[in-house]
Image (tube, rainbow, N blue to C red; front, side):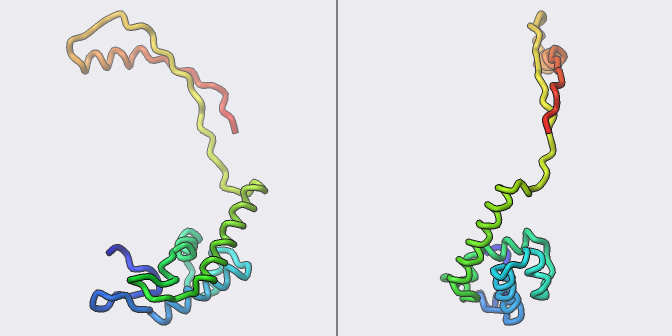
Length: 141
């Protein structure tokens, strides 16, 4: 088995709830559902972690319980948090408040017709690469 999710520990090959961490997981879910940001939800719960780690906690269905992991949160809480996560994601996309995309310069490549042929494949490749011409086109932001 891979990494044990926060809120659990493995004892004798069985997942058991770590009471302190499980309480923190419950508070993270509640904080997020009640309007806090991902990072603030964890910070307020006493477990300051980066927002991507909080998102990973909110989307791990194992917290609802399964064949291996005991239940830490109710399925309704899990669904409410994920519904809120989707709503906020959609809202950010509509308002354009997403991470700035770094523009990539567009280039055009042209290959002149080969005039020579080498039996050595490395020399032939070197020759063909020397025929490539590029032209940088206006960069779009």
